[in-house]
Length: 369
Image 1: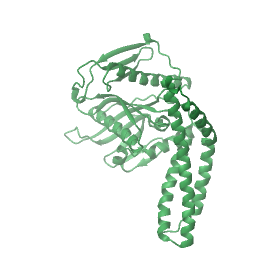
Image 2: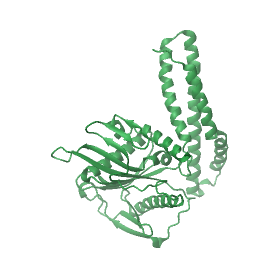
Image 3: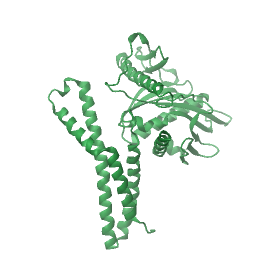
Image 4: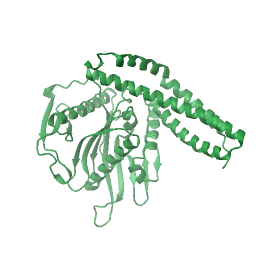
């Protein structure tokens, strides 16, 4: 193998880790863990279940952050020792192993460094993703379903739980719209760069003449709210409609009117949920989504632009942020960052970390300009 300057690369990674440690402020994290640990130990903790879930969830999140950093730091320290011993023993096989491990560690450090860029007010929150079919007919509906699968596969790769709130099926194939939550710390900060219009170019499987078709889908990402967030919605501002859940091809999934649609009359914001078994559960889930969307609108208005938390997503020509081209060549390219992949199938299978990292760095650069 070609000679590699392990020492210089490890030294650079150690410097990066030192910077990350300062940004994360591990000392403050440990103080918060100690305080939350005392609250968890209180005998009356579960008298208030909402607060108990908040406290235990926050404790778990902080402990995970500390563990992620210290584990990576230990791996880097162990690698430095391994390389030193291999050099002394002139052990080429061990150096080959070290080479592969160094590549893995560099990728992990890059991911952790990107995490430090997520310092927005709601970046640490879980995410609610809403997809909407745009221009392009049945191909657009099919594309919308492909995107939903892509994000769910990404969550599965990271072992993040997913909760589906609503899926509205198109008549021929695919989805008219879908709403689901990815329940992981920093899911909102990470995925918020996905908001915008996505464009697919391919030979349409629905065109019997085999013509190339361009279609669009809109992606909206909002943060999940906590009890402390101030979003008060008067009952008279909400219209509640109930209906039967529908499946692919218009088939009825439920024989009772359990699906719920909420309309926020002042803003015209509409959300629905049909994936729970009872009307009450669906209404509660729909309210979670509605509050998250109203918070996004509120924050966007405060910042005087609509692309901060929510984005003005038209899902049509001229405003796409990413192209997925399957014909005449194969490439997925982000038009904001320039990041691209020549393997669209891997991207649709959830391999989107490169796009997310590039998007987060691009957004931070735009904020600093």
